[in-house]
Amino acid sequence: MTQTFDSSIPIYDVCILGAGFSGVKLLHECRKRGLKTHIYEALDDLGGTWRKNRYPGARVDSDIPVYELNIPEVYNTWTWSERFPDWSELRKYFNHVEQILDLKKDIDFNTFISQAQFDRKSGYWYIEASDSKKKCYAKFFLPCVGFASRLYKPDFKNFDRFKGKVYHSNEWPESDVDLSNKRVGLIGTGSTGVQITQEAAKVASELFVFQRTPNLCLPMGQVSNPEIQKNKKNYSKILNSRFDSFGGFTFTFVDKDTFDDSSEDRQNFYQTLFDRGGFNFWVANYKDIYFNQKANDEAYHFWRNSVIKRVHDPKTAEILAPKIQPHPFGTKRPSLEQDYYEQFNKPNVHVIDIKNDPIYEFTENGLKTKEGNEYKFDILILATGFDAVTGSFKNIDLKDADTGKILRDKWADGCNTYLGLSINGYPNMFYTYGPQAPTAFANGPTCVELQSKFILFIIDHMIQNDFKSIEAKKEHQLNYSNNLKDFANSSLFPKAKSWYMGANIPGKKIEMLNYLQGIPSYGKLLNEVYQSDFKGYEIL
Ligand code: N01
Image: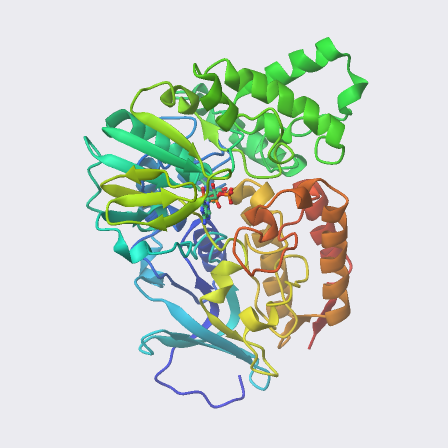
């Protein structure tokens, strides 16, 4: 380093934001290379999303062992109690990770980084926390901030009038909230709303679920003490097989179109996928399910028939699983449910169709709909989601190295990245599990592992050759982004108003925010760039 730096500010080889799966994985790998690495984490402990998501029923929807770190010393000494663990077990898991890897000595918790900019002269990033007390310089800057860290609260008319308690699912208090014998209003039926419904319906005196769009939920297939853990010798093989799967799981789309099979074989196949549980029906289905509306209709009708059998009242069944598809199956995230539909057979649980009769305003005791129907409750839960994927980057003033323009402003008219992990104007910065990567269509730890490997190749290459900076070239970035959006436009995904497309946030540009061609194709692309001496990057 030739520049003069403020000697009171620490200098790192690598600075990471966030101590969830990605941050932890990268810290561990960087340390193995002897790199001076530091994490800043806004929350008070390890675990990323699992520190915040602790609402009743919060549970992962990728099964073990694919949803864990591929680090033998960690998985060989850990046993899960369920196939789909809940938030409290994930917190215990991160405590275990800490015991084995001893990470915390290199982490500042409760530190929210609010601004960062690369200095072309020195080849270093300057990074500063919101209270201006913590700052550092770093050669490489790795924001690992997740795809759901900026929550969304809709702007309801007269919201302030409501006198009861209000909780957003992502701000659930550590002290917990007693829902028993309370009248509870719940807005939102995404993954979060479904999970909360299953718990709240069992204790609340009344539960009003305000549904704008039905969640086309799939059977979770929960299992206690999963057998698969008995032979950890197989883990390495199982974990490697994730890279051959579209979604980074142990299953993938079949190499067949929907109408290649007879009607009977198709029904049997759908049933097999249902019986396997998890996301099988979503991403191990026929390969044309997201490209052919008729094929998608078939899947929807199978799904609908399975649901209406479980709901006693036909009017309620029609709200939860309408005859006319609300959107092509799977183009909004299907939640994994355990006994969601049965909850609506209880006299104290009501689903209110706010698509047909929207929320008009809040009152002191609840809310009124446009048609004048009034609902009274003591507690309101907002399960209204996130400014997902790009939103996590909006909280930070990430300044362009040349213009100083902030990334959120640069992306106001659309998001552009190279390979879903680097951005022109932000040299030596690589992010994980974010915009234009397989993110929302992939199991998190698989996506992170693939990206981390690539990022570490780059870091090794830069250090071994004593290079100063590496930056995505504009034209390659544009090409990558355009190809990603064109491919998405050839699919059924744009037909749904989903957070995959940024359509859940009023005013947000509607565009595909995730790489839709699957983990194997993404891995191939990264490998090609690596093999070609980092095609699309300028290295100085
Ligand atoms: O958020 P969402 P989420 N009036 O955006 C409704 C991950 N996650 O927190 O669909 C009325 O999916 C909105 O309605 P609509 C997972 O990847 C994972 O549930 O826009 N309603 C929708 O029903 C997940 O996909 C787990 O018509 C309004 C809901 O709010 C992602 O996080 C658990 C409204 C928002 O659903 C986000 O899930 C939880 C309004 N003005 C989350 N605005 C696991 O299992 C919004 N809604 C690991």
